[in-house]
Image (cartoon, rainbow, N blue to C red):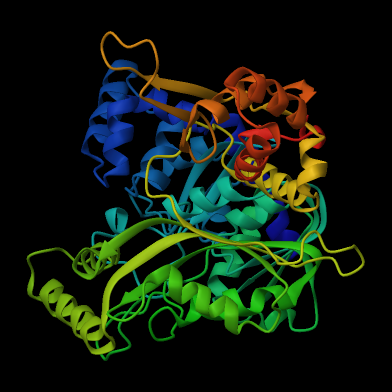
Length: 525
């Protein structure tokens, strides 16, 4: 990036700050109902709110002008834009490719980019940025191009929430797009390398990094791991182009979502090769799709990928969050590209998707989270077998405002702690119940004893774990003072059962609760 570009971006930053161009300011302009409508790709309520504001004030405001131009994608007058961006000016905005070029005779200025505020709460606290991306279909009035650079979408928010944000020296953002994950990683990594196959995406990501004051991100052009072929990192994050698209003539292939391979082969490649680019102890986190075929369930296929990976010592935790029938999957992604349902073009693409799935024997498509970890060979192995956890969690998540990253880290820590201890060592340890865990008891009318008990996790994945009387009593007694063995001995006396037999029954269940961060070891307090 040249010095003149940096100067222009600095001027833009100054103007956006002066205008108060923030998420809360936009919500204040048009209210929560118009906000919700914009998430449904409808801008009429927001436009009506801005019109009311102009009638009340007799003029627009800098915030309203920026919102109308860059968020709603509509033209504004040159005078309005000059008032909103006094330091950058119209010429500077054009040089940054935010607007189309204008001359003195033009009565309006049109946007060529989307620019909007973004706020978040992660494990490091509250933050707010501005994010530039390509104009969406609402602003364009038609489907986006195949080289479209996406802004902050639902998958972006999911991955940034999953990101473990412990301090690391180096991080890799694979397929950075507009740069959102690279910037989140740059909050806890000393340096970040961000790659993408799209030169336009890298240009936009570099603007976003500069606009938001990041100096520790390096951008590189190339496919998947090619730009970092001889390097390794402490952390890899990726929202890869995992959408399964027919490799057929006439079917658009969008760079931001389509990896160019058949089926779920791109996700398979990342699963099997990410560990090769991790430092010992390094963590990889990404999103993915996997196919359910007539012969093999989705998570079974992912397990096959892990069996075929070059490194059989890697830890793997795969969480499936949703499964779609192929009809629903096709409809979702055809609409995502901007093709209107109930049109001949939609029907043509629909047929191509279903033909591809039928030809390859695919019946459903799963979506979920992938966490991989490379063991540290310099440290003694935590257990004889690496972590291999594949599970379906299709229900609602727990309430965690800062995302799932901290919970994932706690679960991995808990698993490492319990897996490194024998049953006798675990029994000699003290545990505490996580602060978000409650016990739910169900009774038949008139009964004194519960017919069912459930441990309910308020945060994390919102797990609901059925428990019996013995385990409920043990969990209730885990206050960090008594060892598991002491609790089992007291329960055995109370229940008139053998203490050793009770301990042998409960300790394996305790391990599972530690794995889920329902019970916390001393290291987590």
